[in-house]
Image 1 (cartoon, rainbow, N blue to C red):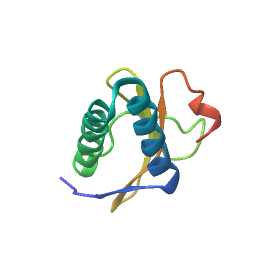
Image 2: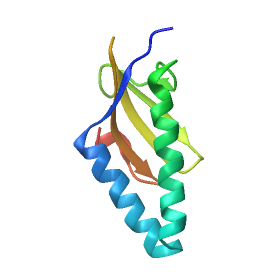
Image 3: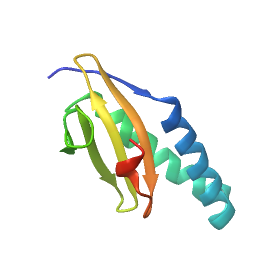
Length: 99
């Protein structure tokens, strides 16, 4: 099985920070930190069996999407050596236009 590096695009890092801030304001920093930790552990697990989720070449060539805990849609691409996390969309955000 091919192991790949998992990297976050700047937009994905900004999405994580915005999600942390939103959850922190609603439920407190401990809850936000725990949720972000779960997301990051999940995404770092993409180093193996990287080609998961659903292919969405109709939106962008090589794009894959997958959900996380029913609330976050994750957009990413996979190359021979790297999984690039492009964006994270929380709740009902219109992700198809922003990838």
